[in-house]
Length: 142
Image 1: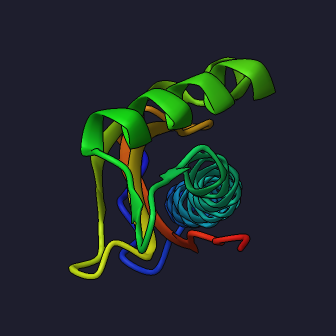
Image 2: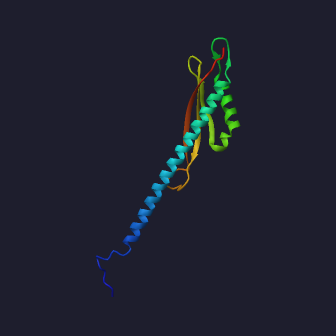
Image 3: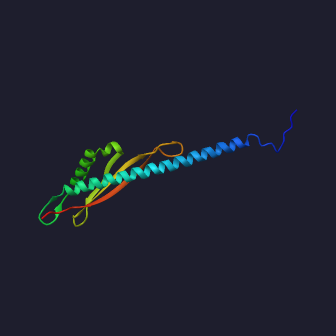
């Protein structure tokens, strides 16, 4: 009959290695997810800059100050996003805010999309909501 030796650590190393590997995998998934969200947020900001600029250029100047409505801004932004193929690059891309400054010389636009996260679904959610806001000045040629 074999007696139990209290100093025998066989099997302990395997458990320790498996624990360390799982922690390393979770850490890698979090870093990868943060990188993907950052890259998608930067790309969405670029899309918002282009759409706000397109909306500002579409302003119909009236004598004095340009007049552009929220609906015109949304329409111009959506047209720009469709022409640029932004909906193929971003899941759930929508215009969530649009308007002008009180004086009417600056257009603002806010976009929302979902950043799809790669990696371990049991560590991170499948997607994260990202938003970007941009402003563009309306140019008046006299």
